[in-house]
Length: 251
Image 1 (cartoon, rainbow, N blue to C red):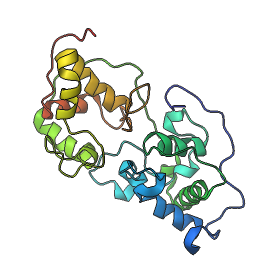
Image 2: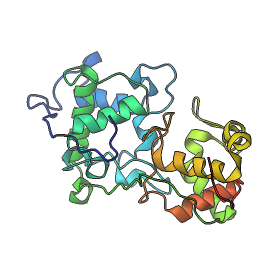
Image 3: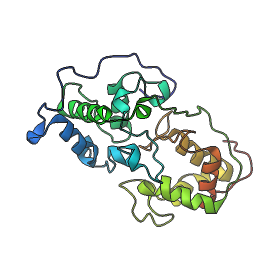
Image 4: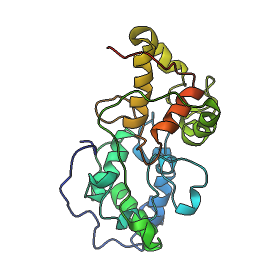
């Protein structure tokens, strides 16, 4: 199940008996245990996973700074009326989408320690959140991809540093990259350039940024919505990565 284009039926996720004082593993409260899980790549119990919840989401609005996160701020998330741009109406499903698609974890048992701890953690964050953080967050992911005009490499270098480098590491060298994240742009060129040509390879870059691992595209990358990265900003990143422009993609 993916969030794009599908409304998920609402169901109860917040367990009424759960509170910050409930006990989780190691004598922590569930909220404390959830905070610990959110900051650990071990949360998914998948040896290939290298990301944490706070890799893709700022914990609080004050944490954002100049970083460009693909996901919305966690503070206030539990109090929002919907998630994934209104396509998901159940917090458990919204959390499970991240847990399964981007971390390679199994389905989350709503009564298990991990689900209850994450719920308590998000509920605790929401209890201290400003009203502005509890509103639904727009998240537009276009279902189809088209080429975009060439961008500016200087602007792209700054955007890459703030949106891409955390996972993919430095351009060409991959210095600092997380786990199995692809080396950019080299891995994508190697996999696609000779087979599909420059124009289609450019659209593959755009597709991966926009759709991530959703809509049939493989991998564990999260999608970057139009609210997070505009087409012009993606064009700037592609210019920095020296992705060819021009021509027509005819697969």
